[in-house]
Length: 392
Image (tube, rainbow, N blue to C red):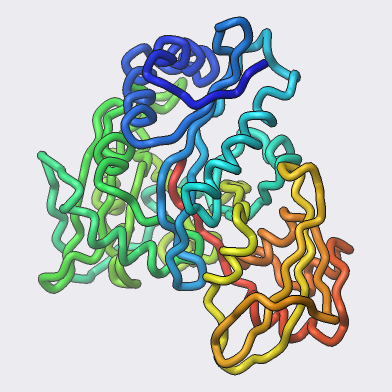
């Protein structure tokens, strides 16, 4: 087996694998690979000249506690059935992680088909979503002064400012590039049929946008409204979304939308609990531990030092060790420290992004830590809701 960079000559092989693994049409498969060829860095595993597995990563920036981190979004992991369970994805991930570090990425995110599969590579469950299936009649009527402006010829600039504001509000969110808007978010995938685009305006200000499609209800007459993408700048924008949904009461049965896990959906739609589902949606990993720590936002009112000891399966579980000194809102490398924090990379990644606190990891027996620094570590890595929105 040989792992090498993806090239344009691998296109036909990749399209074949995407069609098989993701059950995509020929048109959607070719669109999927075009984005990878133009903007992504990919790798393949081959034997005797035959490509049997491939994956790539998108360039993103990610909001972590209000600071933008250069993040690689992994997508398109495909392997032919005859080549599975032979370690091909693992070997690609090893090469790819080293490549990410060389390219200056600090973190990585992926959408798992099976979280346990990616956990063995060091990615950690990070972001959950509430999957809401809401009877449109259960949505509260909104008397606010909203304008609903349909966009028939959408371009990224219609939505980009709202999306950037939305991303800055939610820990873990990603800032999209123009090409990602055009070739992923706004592309009318065949399984989605037609997409509809709306800007929601309140008192002359654009406060939200929504992109949705209609889905036929299986074995019944009628359609559901399936929200493909949305963003809002404030609470009035969120209210505006539901105000728009309410206008469909004579047209659709249910509205289907994925929301941040701390979103108070019951304020907008006092719906049945059976209509709310939780899903462990996205996984996260700190790729470059040393540089990510040196870039991390530091509180100005704590001062301490510690040695961070991490094991990563993509680094053969060798113990990586870095000592840091924190003082007056700054962090720097030092030779050594008498205080230690020792854990696996998946545990550290959950704490880094805010999924778990140090107290959670202690309760789970996932860390060894000097007692003197526990309170400072808790201040350094605050627990926060993580909302990673994009799919890669």
